[in-house]
Image 1 (cartoon, rainbow, N blue to C red):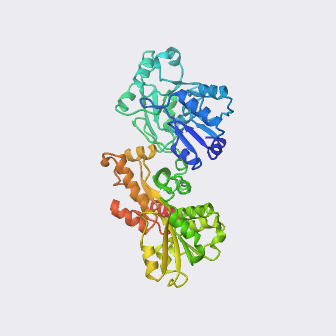
Image 2: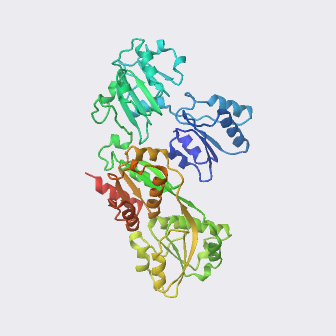
Image 3: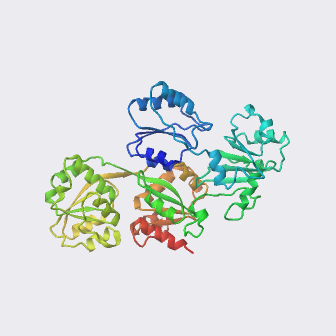
Length: 503
């Protein structure tokens, strides 16, 4: 997408999006953005166009910043005319931001040039959704054809071209899920492509027909046998820089809903193909009572312990909601676990008084900078499921620990389609886990999503953990851990994977 479109997502108040929109783009909008899925897919329930028009007008007239997000070029076989007509009739201002059609992008991702000085001096783009409405006599004479929405009617497309004397040996490529980690490409000829794709779901696909398909094997970084029935080509920095240590590896990153893609960026920078799978939803606790009481008596505490960025964000948000600010902590020392947590605290204009080595909570007690006996400690934490050992060890040293729920972590109800397909198709090489909760909720999501658990086979998938406690949970649920970070940070986990796979 364009830079302008990307920046508009960051300020969207309402996002109205289509079915084929990359799910990672849905994470680019603000947390409070209303997201409305109005996607239309063949054979599935869909939102009527009239209802989509009404939604756009309704939210525009409410004074909200609305982004209508479509996949590709919104004017290529889209329904922009109807939507714009509805907006104009209602007096709503609008702006159209260009996109790149899958008709152009998919062949490029597959390494197929649509024009060539000898083989293809022109190309036609059309939809085969209604093949009877097309002028096949004219289309059959063109050198290169690009067909959208043609998977279900592939037999009819071939029939119409062959009956008009198009050579049975004409090369054809079928590109499914172009530009995603699930991209697949089938190549063949008009006389054998049906056999090669028999029984497969050809949606969403872009079909390319013409001699230029044969150029694909010469334009790839690796030799491709044109007789192969399927080849997965995922365009990324890895395809151009095969020396990158994680080139060719597809990594499933489990993370919190709404969390930044910082870790994904680190992995992509060293060549990995990343699929994000939110396995944790963070929200407010069931009650603010205990935290409010603790904030009201902050002067009674000697130390405030914060072990996560979630704890910091929810604690200070509640402090602000109660009409206070960081000055209320003037006489309270603050201990944090991990440099990332320390950085989050600095965003509150506060500097931690103590950061334990090894970036784990266990070392906090062992290396605490002063005697704990008689100290009163406030510990805002997750409401349920957190580790109890820290509180027990602090108490054993004579400290009085007041635990209060600052936030809650829950298991998401669904799995992104990209992650689901990658797991089903055994396209995942590595799964990363940054907390015990992400391990537990990943397993719960898999149980809830796949009735037949054998569909998801992790036997050959590398299990990567950020640290000892996460590894302990991995051992309990998977029976193994293949990679553990030496430094218990996302950067440390990245380096551990690089160390494992670098040549």
